[in-house]
Image (cartoon, rainbow, N blue to C red; front, side):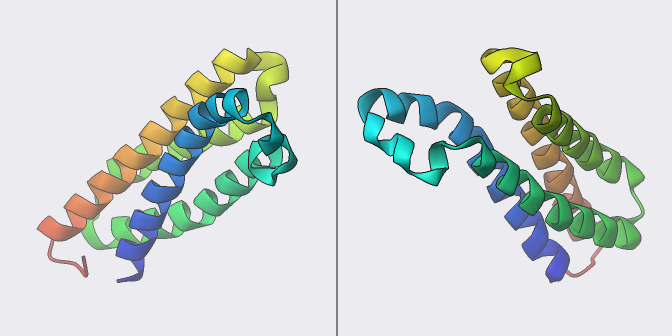
Length: 128
């Protein structure tokens, strides 16, 4: 049950991360006063990633213990590495477009890992 909830939470947080990357500039163009909100801040991105990290690692570890498919773990962890690397490099080194591309790519890998984890657990009759 915990693994299933964490899989869903990680998927949701990854999607929020992607939406944040694309929606924030659009919203700021139409409503510049949103700059006062912490959602427009880069720290929001960091908070999301550090929420995704523990949830993903626990969910993937629990799932892999049950179904034994380590490729699921590799998919998810590669996405986490891309997200953390993107956060550390930031748009100073990657540029705004590069940061968005890497965030979408990393989030996609995390989502793939969790979807595979969810499916593997279902087919191996674990608690999902």
